[in-house]
Image (cartoon, rainbow, N blue to C red):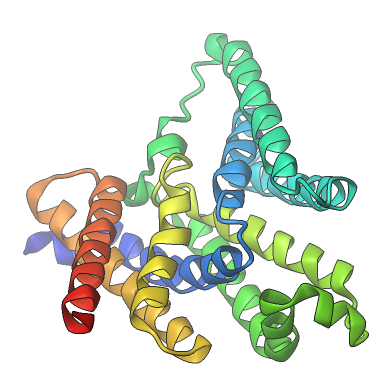
Length: 267
């Protein structure tokens, strides 16, 4: 139990607890809008930004955040250009992000560039700057969602009705994309770019399985996210396991239990 008193583990718990609120919350909006894969896309683009940050000696998460925001704008532009095939926007930006990341990785070999922690997560290496960034993102996301909860609810369930009612759909779509980019950029050092979409989508899947209303789903995704992240960190710390992988596998276990329980109750 000595690990609980270690400063690095306490920082990990704080960072994990904060991101466990925002990632599942934004994931619920994405899943309901059938944009679940946007998490993977922005994560891969963020990694390209992280790689560039290492190359030019600027805080990698900040550069990754800029890349993710630019990618979110690009996705929205392509979604409007290919209305019938909106998923093309995600595929195109993901391909570009992977290509750019691989190019920057190649360029960074001579600089001993280490991006492994950003690919697979390294929550135990969070520093004070990372905590402040994550806390800032959490405040921005929660404040924005609370202020615009009615508009976001309408946009999520019926975008056409929202447009007809006079809601500035384009503005809110961009806002959601930027919020998602913020959350993903803040998350990649916790669970890694390769697993960040799981933190967005699996709690949403569990919440939608067990809830009977949107409000219940919002509460459930946050509770599930917190439980999985905190329990996953404790398990990984005690048994010396990979934190990101432990959190995701725990989420999958909770999902299996929730689906099984729901089917038994309905039988």
